[in-house]
Image 1 (tube, rainbow, N blue to C red):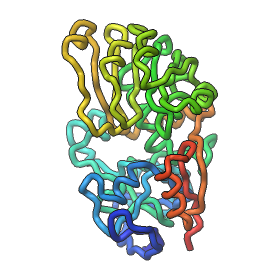
Image 2: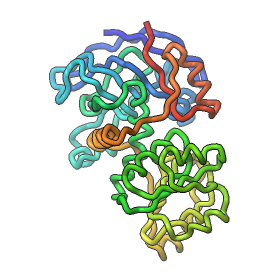
Image 3: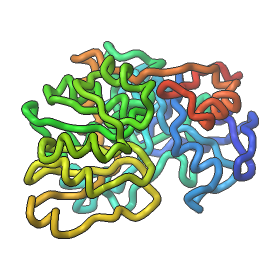
Image 4: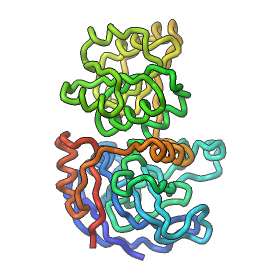
Length: 337
């Protein structure tokens, strides 16, 4: 079996159409007809080899939605024609302690969809059956792709940290991740404060679910909410006054990082100890948590805010994402032939 895909042959290179021989379908694998695929900043990092692990030619794309085209003889729980989605992870060992505890996303042998294999900027893509997550009928094929990376990235810590409907929470950064976090936390029942450095996003943040907005770089504004929040989710990837954000937390509060902040976090130990506060981070969620997130989205009509491009215009779509002007996710719709 072969597929048409879009590949780059060098860092920061343009994508061009190529044919890829997929080889035999594995016993426990599923082949997905790609209907659409989101573009994530992680795709840009892999295209540019920012993390030093890209292999060329590289086919990006790890926010896939489509339908099951074929199943290996040992694939379970799926049927041909079923709507599914695939995110950053596409396989785990299914035998280690983490997998057996339901933490497949923490497996030391985790397989990443665009690391050492081709991704979803293609007609077809493959994964282990456990990571092809059924898509509820209420969710749209075009807009659901970003849920499988950005969506689960911000939903997972809500589950892991036991965020309660009565909690007061904050979200730093109202972009591709943050705009989904606002929707989740609002529908969860929390009182939500959005922190943004962009004044133009304040009204948008309230439309998406924020009850309050504050400037993320204004220490005076942060001081007005000292000791009031139970949970702050960091979706931005820039250096901020972390001590001020710790000060905004109540005792036992959580400052949780899901944005790829490159600089070390400057955190003093004493405020952590006195308030019994935590600083933590997490990757995407397990298959079970992803399925729960999708059900939550279907129940509360939550979806990513997307701009769409045909997949054949992927280079233009990538330029749009690089410009920082996308609101808030970019999705490619299938038209390769």
